[in-house]
Amino acid sequence: MPANTTTKPWINPYLAILVGVFAVSFSSILVRLCTAPPLVIAAYRLVFTFCFLAPFSLAGGAVALRGMTRRQLALSAASGVFLALHFVTWFTSLRYTSIASSVVLVTTQPLFVVLGSYLFFRERVSRKALYGGLLALTGSVVIGATDFQLGPRAFIGDLYALFAAVMISGYLLLGRKLRADVDLGGYIFVTYGASALTLVITALACQLPFSPYPGSDWLIFIALALVCTVLGHTVFNWVLRYVPASVVSVSVLGEPLGAILWAAVFLGENPTLRQGIGGGLIFLGLYLFTRVTARSSQTRVTA
Image (cartoon, rainbow, N blue to C red; front, side):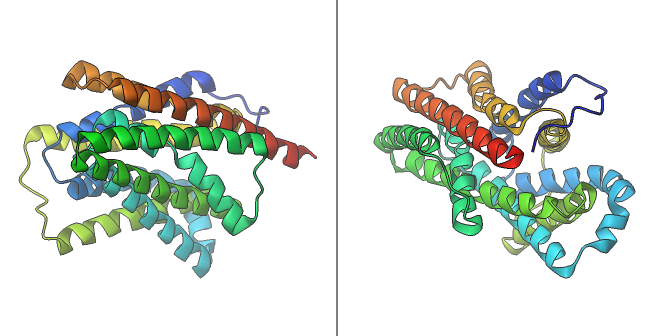
């Protein structure tokens, strides 16, 4: 769907995109610096995000929330479960493999989104887009083979990152289907609430402590919620009203570059040559993949 250009935004959308990319690029290094278990980190991130956004969601979407059918409520909750699984598996991958490998592999989610779109919605993919997807998958294999040589621990981390990419794809697919009929405020309230509840119950079942943690960890929990989620992911959702989805999709590829830079600066964790080659192939493949896919979608809408 073309971007809405009739309403003048209060801030330049392209500047907002840069803010969003800058905000989300801190996620991986914040998780790495936190001493809490990955499941607890994910739980606090979603709990704080839900608590912060709930008043705004209810103010703008209370009527829509009451009007949601049982099926829409169930699918929104399922979307939240996918989001919860994404965060916990991605955060776990950061304990096993390098930030460079983890953030690059989790960025392959557009491939799984399109695969799911074909399997569940019968949306076809052009041959040019498939070439880009194959190029990105080749980069994933290069990174996986490199990390396997470093040891099974790093390779397991890569598998966690890929699983996280699959989980975020399920979240996006359900969200896209629901957002055609459900107001954003109502959808966010149910999805974030279900995600936070899933993570809290799972952490309690695993008997993980929610306290005590050092003050630095609490600052990280809040930063992950307010900076990485609210100023990051929420900004991307807002920007989609004013700019084409292809611009946002390609811009998000800047997140791994920022994450790798912060890891090198603050942790001294520099990517290897093979990781750089694999990451380059993934970036190039995803760039081609998202651009071609977005153009095909616009063609179908305007036809």
